[in-house]
Amino acid sequence: MGTVLIPIPDRDFDPTEVAVSWRVLTDNGHRVIFATESGTPAVADDIMVTGRGLDIWSALPVLSSFPLVGLALRANTNGRDAYAAMVRSPEYRRPGRWKDATLDGIDALVLPGGHRARGMRSYIDSDILQRLVVEAFGRELIVGAICHGVLLAARSVDPGSGRSVLYGRKTTALTWAMEGLAWRLTRITRFWDPDYYRTYTEQPGQGCGYMSVQSEVTRALEDPADFRDVERGTPHWRRKSSGMARDTATDPRPAFVVDDGNYISARWPGDTHTFAGVVSDKLSL
Image 1 (cartoon, rainbow, N blue to C red):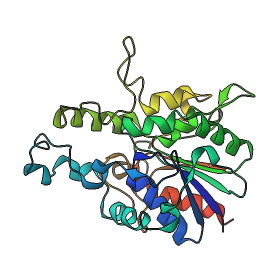
Image 2: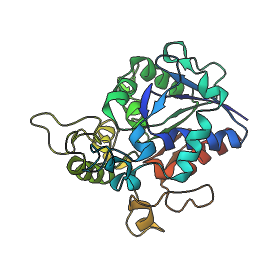
Image 3: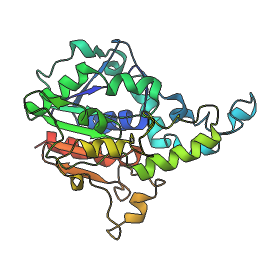
Image 4: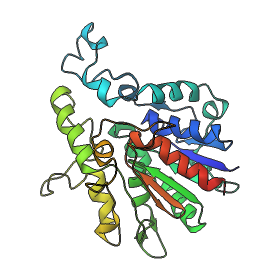
């Protein structure tokens, strides 16, 4: 069995990507260690937990309790149950601090995601975490990244080569098809905060989607074709690409995971059971 380090921001991470990963790994006998920026227990993006805040009527006291759009985008029952259990666990309640994190005694580094800019930017932009990612790849540890966690890996530049640790790797991440669809929807329904679903937005002169996760990750790769997505016509491709179906502990059909040796990547919360299962299996070898 192995020991897994999961660094997360103090707030606004995706509850499914962290909690389901924690549950799969611990259920399979692995030890999980958390690290936050402040060294205090973190809090997930409340909208992704409750679903409240994504409807046009969300600002109204009574109607805000009746989410509609949020029901489709929030964590499902599996994710919410895992999150509720995780926040009560001793390891989650006593995290380390990013600046004190070490890979000594660590077998795998898991990088979950989230999209809400107020919390996720400190995580993705962290020099401390980027150096930790570079060290993990240098030690050839198992590294798993999902959603915006892949963006953290893409921004982690090896000082020796001057290139991202993902250069020469095969990877997936949150696709622009998924990110753009959720953004276009929530910029209307959450009109007072139209960029809620975008962690980074385009600057003047940059085309639409230039700062999307997929675009930035692709720019870090050796070959744009190294960014992988579900190919049309492959088994279960409609289920995998719909953005509506999520995998479970017993049904991996909706999931899409890229296995590139000691590096494993996935797109969004709907891939998490399968993603964490691959990490777990590699730890057990």
